[in-house]
Structures are given as C-alpha cells and as structure tokens.
Image 1: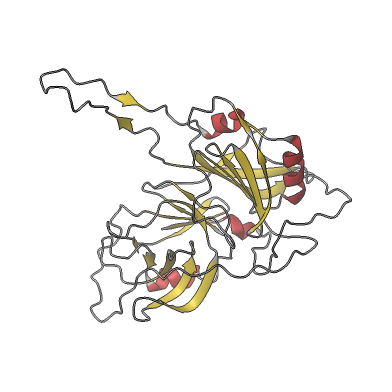
Image 2: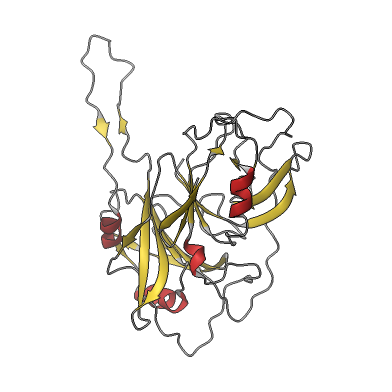
Length: 327
C-alpha cells in the first residue's frame, strides 16, 4: 500500500489481501466509514482495528495478520504500525485505488478539466441527502492509497495467537437525512461509456445525472481518475493530477469453433481495441455546458472526475462516492 499526499509518495507498507475464493475487488473506491475499534459481525467478533470501509458489502482496510501472501476474506490487512499512522491522516471521501500494478499520480492538464466558476445567485439544492460526516474541502483529501492484491509484500510470519481477521458482513448504508439547502465538500463526477451518462455527487449525495455524448462509442475509454489538487492563479484555475487504472479491455481473445477438426488451422487471435489515453478519453467526451458550469461552481480541492467504460456498479449506492470495479 502506498500513500500519496499532494501527488507525492509519503508512506508505503505491506498488505495481505483476499484469497481466490474471497478476492479483494480491484477498482476505484473511497473511504466511506471509519471505526477505530471495529469487530467483525460474522467471524466471532474478530477484531478489525483501525477499520476504514471502502464498500458496504464488507471490504475494508484494517490492521491484521500479514503472513506474506493473500490471506483475507476480501479485506486489505495492514501492519499495526502502518494502520495506526494512517488512521489520523485519512478523512471520509479519501480516494482508494486497488490495482494489480503499482500506480503513481502525475500532474495533468487538459482543456476539458473543470475550472472554478463563480456561484450563481440562486440557491443550489441537492436532490436528497445531507453532508453530515462528509469530507471537507481540504488539500489532504487528494491523497490516494494503492493496494496491490497480486503481489507478495511481506515476509512476516503469521501470529498464531492472533484472532482471525476477515471482511465484515454486509452493513446497511446509513440513513440519509432530508434535503438541506446547500451541500458542501468535494464533488465527484463519473462519466460512464456503458451508460452514456455523467453522474454528479457531493458529500456522497447524488446531485444530478444527464446524458453525455462520446465520440467513437465502440472504442474503449479506459479507466482514468483525475483529482483536483489546488486552486491556482487568480482563483480561476485548478491544478489536477491523474492516474490510469489498468483494465482487461485490451486482453487478446481467441475465438475457436469446437465443431472444426483439430487439423484445421487455428483462427487468428482477435484483439480488443486498446483503451484511450487519459487525454484521448477527455477529447472524446462532450458534456452539456450546464453540467460544466454547475461543476465549476461546486469545484474544490479534493474533487474528482472518474472516466470509465464501466457503468454504476452494485457497490455504488447511498453513502458512497462512485465505485468503479475493474475486476
């Protein structure tokens, strides 16, 4: 696991992730709940100290045994020291990316990335929900954590006296209060090629969704995460960084006809179209101007834009930002 602050790596530590029967999902997540003294609801109350939940179906970061290989029921276990140091740094809404390869955020600029705009005179009301407990617009919210499920990152021997640590039971999302006049905090934007829509949330609360036009809709976009770092210049610009999350869209596929005899020559391998780069993906996306203007009014450091071929997964729900599963 690697922790980034303001685009710079500040800490790294070993983890243990899910086994084949209970894999750790890969993709784009955020911290949606924290519990310093959490205990599992389904594994005899096994302790899960420094728990930071990333899905309501039971996947979380927490302190646990690190045997040097995948060993959990889907959660991401950290050492005691790393979990303890990470705990006071992260806030609700901090971005978590789980990938098979090591990723590093890079500075990124593009004409289609959102810029701050002056708010209109009319009040802005969310569709529903409140921001109680939501992340505030602070620069530290741009930190990103990356766990590497397929890599052995520790040679530590397991503690035979330690209680079993595993993923938690499915927990209902928290009750969302009635609408309040104004929402605050980071805004999250998700553009889905599958659904041909743009979705916008603030403080884990849905604001609106609208159709979006994508050039060459059969060409994969890839999965790209853009994070607003800080307002620059005279307050009319935003500094961004970017990470591209590996997907399976470029894996080659061989089509065989089982009715053919083995002596027949094999059919050629058909490769899927490669996904776009981050810049190419943004070039292909055309958002309604009213969406661009509204997001610019809400934009604060820590806000994000996620572009993906995937649709809204079942993990995206009440009390979450957009969760994009790549595996």
